[in-house]
Image 1 (tube, rainbow, N blue to C red):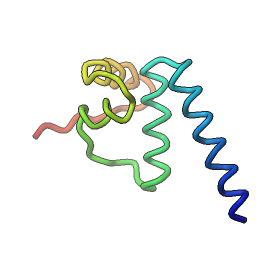
Image 2 (image 1 turned 135 degrees about the horizontal axis):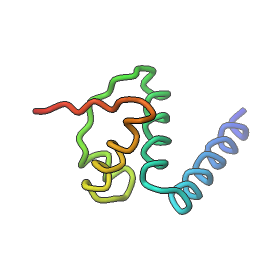
Image 3 (image 1 turned 30 degrees about the vertical axis):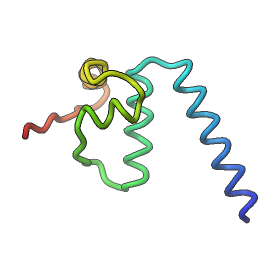
Image 4 (image 1 turned 90 degrees about the vertical axis):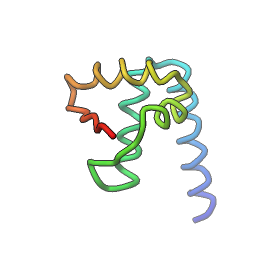
Length: 81
């Protein structure tokens, strides 16, 4: 059982590395948001653009552009402080 978990985790890490290398910031943001939604089991999770940028390894301005690009897929609501 542990071996299957390790194999699944290794596969997920490998896919994430390939995704980070080959896909655009918009695609990486969409994938990351889906993974977070799956882990938290909720469709709303407050995060800052700075935090998301750190998780994606990009600049905050890139996250802003990617979030607006993803609006045509499903709305990404911005929460002001």
